[in-house]
Length: 343
Ligand SMILES: NC(=O)c1ccc[n+]([C@@H]2O[C@H](COP(=O)([O-])OP(=O)(O)OC[C@H]3O[C@@H](n4cnc5c(N)ncnc54)[C@H](OP(=O)(O)O)[C@@H]3O)[C@@H](O)[C@H]2O)c1
Image (tube, rainbow, N blue to C red; front, side):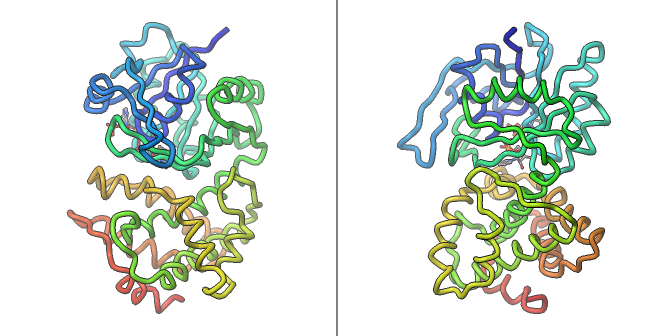
């Protein structure tokens, strides 16, 4: 039986999955909100890897704006909205499929979904997204690398369901199952805590005047985050081609003349325009995942008995700056000065 799949949320992740999977899985529909749906209907969906030279566009995107429009009940709903939209979306799905709730695949950064989704559903698979994707406009999406997504559950239940979803996903992109989901999700949070820092500096939007200061701050934030996770008992999990703990530690402790070139390359490879920068600088949306990523790390540190001074400072500055009505990225020198008391 070919499962009927609905992708709920037509952003960077929802659209890349749609584009990669649609040629191999006909029973696939994308749920988009009005403005995005109209844009996708008019212009089709353009997706490119790395640069627009590699753009390929599909027309006739199978789109709905509300669950009423689905002609067949979905077997699987893949939720690809951000953490701050989860409650609303879960409510809508639950109301609609009270009699026969579908299998849910929840694709968000962080671990907030582990608390939100079980309030609404009983069969939930989670996914750690190990690639970077961004929206230039509602119908134009860029990405770096075709996956992978790591599927898992906190107690390793639903193994057969995970294998079924993996079989479908693997037709279009790289997808694995992890039996260490909690570790994997925390490993991803570690890589995401610098998203707020990059957004604060407007990486990709303005020139960073000092690579040294930028490297020292980035690696200090991440290395402290790594120590927090270790103190809290989290183990390393390989996340596709994303940086390993050894690389993060090496970048933090070796001198700049050795690490600057590696750092520059890693940043270019792994960052693109991150999801938080998309919210604040492109979509001018004041909602961000700061709380579910950086805020969560601080709570985790507190529970583990670790004084995460550098990450606390980062969180405090971001919270203040991001809440300004017209957020403008700061200069590296300004941020550098703010961090001096905790470095
Ligand atoms: N992008 C990445 O590189 C990346 C990498 C790893 C993990 N992640 C995680 O993946 C998750 C999704 O990120 P993303 O980058 O795809 O976000 P995104 O580009 O902002 O897309 C979110 C989508 O959800 C839609 N949405 C929000 N509320 C909705 C609702 N009530 N009903 C229907 N649609 C709704 C938005 O609609 P509109 O079109 O109307 O805005 C948007 O299309 C996040 O947790 C993120 O942290 C992202």
